[in-house]
Amino acid sequence: MSKQDIINLINESNIDLAIKAMLKAMSNDNAIIIQSSRWNGLQKDIDAGALPNDFIQLTKNQIRNALINLAQRLPEDLVVDGMEAPKSSGEVSPSGNKPTVFISYNHKDQAQAIKVKSFFEKNAIPILIDIDEMDAGEDIKEFIERCIRKSKVTLSLVSTNSLLSGWVGMESVLTLIGEGIADKQFIACALENEFFDISFMRKAIEQINKNIKKIDEEIKWRIENGVGIEDVTNEKSRNNDLKSKLPSIIANLKNRLTIDISGDNFDGGMQRILETIT
Image (cartoon, rainbow, N blue to C red):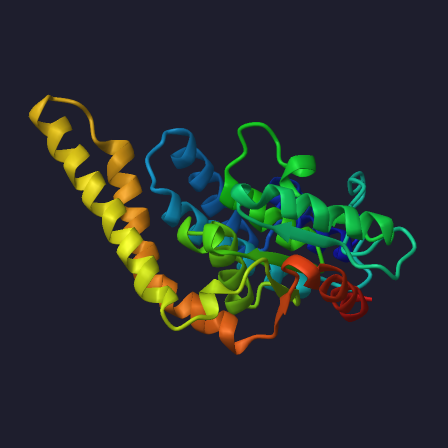
């Protein structure tokens, strides 16, 4: 196993094998030992259900970043004897000149996502999408991060559905790009243009407030009847979080070149995307 193999393992979230290889290559490196200990401790806490998801994702990202930095300092001619890297999907297709594209979308927009998927397949572009790649029971945020790391391009399908759902895909994309975890290309595609209208934010916040009010009523009823509220409390937190982050997400989209693939604009927009990524 080489230095680049180890870096690829980290980028593809195969942390256990990457740490094992790094420890075998540099058994006395205290920095590697510390990150190994952090990772093992985190896994134990996850198994015990002792940590909130947001903290888990933050800690995983911190450990990945630290491991990438450590791996980059390894000797260029490093060979870890007795260890072979698993076959990697990589960031490009077997031909070496077509980038892998991850399609991030809301499930209410699945019909449009499948249409986008078909377009790429007809043009021999390798894609990652949950209907093909997501493992049963896999955490959605972990799946999104894994696909972002394995792909070169993230194509985010933007709609009212995706924005008002809290859109963990958009949040994860922006987080990863902001942290500089990897040099990835992000392209936003508009399935509709309502969210660019100045009145969209008012309508969106009114809908979120209605959701929160409904949740508060449910929480009150459950407390009065001695029923647990963990699930609805999480839902309320998600809506409050969305309410605070939505303006910055919209601003980010407006500051980027968002390609219109709605209705009759689909073919022209997708051709433009194809030319951009190839």
